[in-house]
Length: 564
Image (cartoon, rainbow, N blue to C red; front, side, top):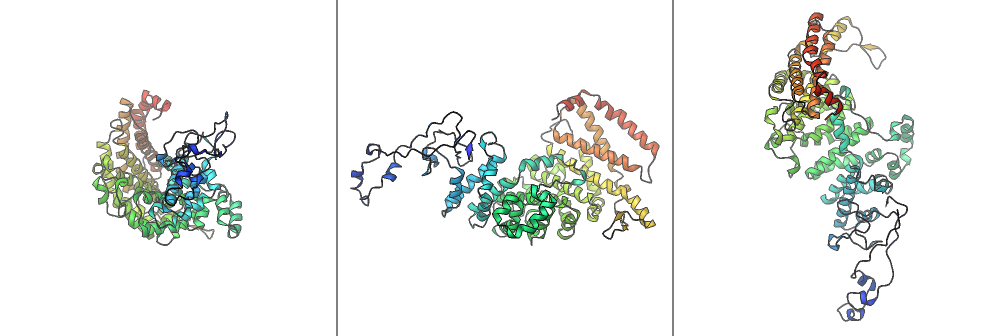
């Protein structure tokens, strides 16, 4: 690998070193005990380090990294005390090349394997953050994959030392996963239709023809050949998910390794429906995650201690674990049904959403983030029409109303926006869940009438129309919700119009209110309680008193021209 330029630099100057440059004359060294045979090559390493050869204009050079993964300047003046000089091809240059790091990772010395893996993980992290985009050609991720990094990391996962397998997990996470992508996907929630999550498969898996060809030929291919075609598929083939389950279940690693492991699992699930089913069908994997990282007991989070500062996260509810299950559920209705019916995910969701916003202030961000993920998953389960998710709305209706009252009375949208960020995020997901519940409840009247007439509503596996049973949730069960959300929208739009101060999270909360009211007024006309005159009056009032003044305000113009 070279930094951008024309050609790599050559090795160090191998010219002979005169005796005057040596720390002691060889004749003197022979007088010492066990120094009767003098090794001139070793004595040369006790002399001053040679300076790198000057580079020509626009000439490239082999990149060398420090232990944090930073590329060192070609002629960087680094003290030997930094331990970055070694017996490599360029002894005058500090740092390690990728090839030299790979040699360290294969070493029989534990400390060298640890240093090599730690540095490599830092390099992969920096590469994912784009720090090398304008400096290195070809891209580092491409280089390390072609050089066999996947196999190196997979073998390192089998090590017994936590120094080694921990860095291997971190390196694998930064190789295949992307935290910025997950954050961006979280930001578009709850606007994604029906809670859908995008798949992130390889080019060969995205093509049905190529996928079928690989299915037929995979048994004859070696692991390294499958890696070149599809890294995630190769990792599953090498039982990476099973090894990670063993680490979580038996080894019980530190918090960082647990979180990186959950991130790797999430990336595997995003790959394809096939990969998602592999995770679900892995014996004890989901049970280990649920029992250890999604318990019903929330007391560890109520201490105010951040997850990153805990010595162990076993027994602590983790938002990353719930995020993994949400992505898993979004892959298909059958997968979601397995989580609900076999693993009692709904019970855990209700535990996490039962936290009142006033009880989880900013120092308890983990608890608020957990509530946000719980509502997001609840919305996904409601989109599939799963009965337990519908029944939970009715059972927790008083709590839901209480939380909406809190937002109506206590949460401003134009004051202390940073302090209220997590309240905004939780509120957006809460209202999104209610929007899904409203869509479910709106279908009850239609499905009930068709059920009485025995009219089919869907085409079953036999090709015949089948009758869907009506949901347990009715339109009247949500009678208090529309007025509360409409009041919140009015309050927040007026506040926003007055000051113009807001944030992205606050606007996302506003958008959730608008989405709910849109669904409400569209679905209302199909209900027995519908009154055309009353509906038109309410819409006209909302438009004239709230929406139109806001659209004509300077605040709206500023938001359109310069969104937060």
